[in-house]
Image 1 (cartoon, one colour):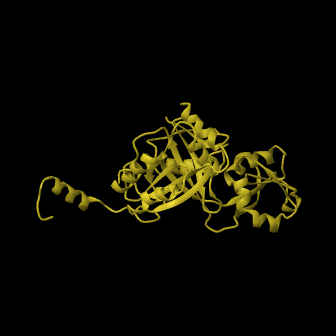
Image 2 (cartoon, helix red, strand yellow):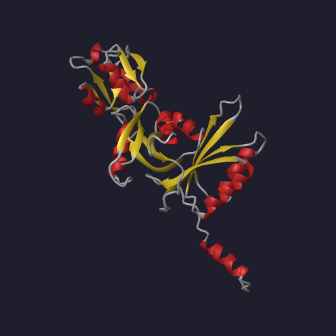
Image 3 (cartoon, helix red, strand yellow):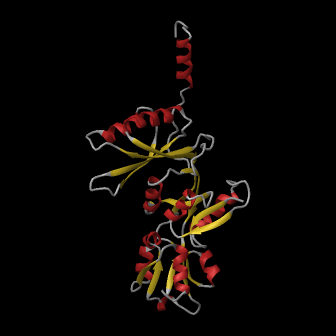
Length: 304
């Protein structure tokens, strides 16, 4: 039975994403779930050999990319993304039995969750002080332990801890979605499906035009970039890594050629090619006709 870590404790959206991956037959059978206190800790369990994979959040439609996940993927021995899933995210406000909304003076919340319910809290709990928790499930645990009056959390965490729901379906934005990825040690990428995502991290020379030249490797081959983001390397001011997602698969000729070209001039970390849950953008062009033309030229065929 494979051991799969997730950003815990039990009751987080990440555990729900792991359950969704299990139900979609990403794994060959049942898995042993292993809770980890942070995204980085979950990924380090793979590197240490304690687990076979990990599920972590990577992007929110409301708050953007999850920086803790991106940084952990960029630093340390290389890991690889092999699958993804998405969850529509809304929150449950949990409290100990007997507590009413009017009684809430402190509200425990994971920072990403707090940002997604900011307007609701301003309307319904304007005097509540935000107590920062390490995860959505940990916010519920903080309430159960008496460290806060209420929590921005999940229904699953409330059921597990015997808490009362003061409000459900809480979200400032309709159809808020978070994308989660399954990460393993490097392996052969899943077979291309025609609706795939490829992700890389670039460290470029600090010289004029280096970023433009990197983008050109994709643009000239008709590759659709769907995410471009920079994160500091933390080695000094003005030094950044660039995270790029594109439509396509490493087995697509255009994508492979772009990666080879980038490898000649930059430090590139391949984070994986895998089936996209929501296909967005334009797939890279096929090279079948051009490849056949080149084959015929090599054979000395005339009048091409």
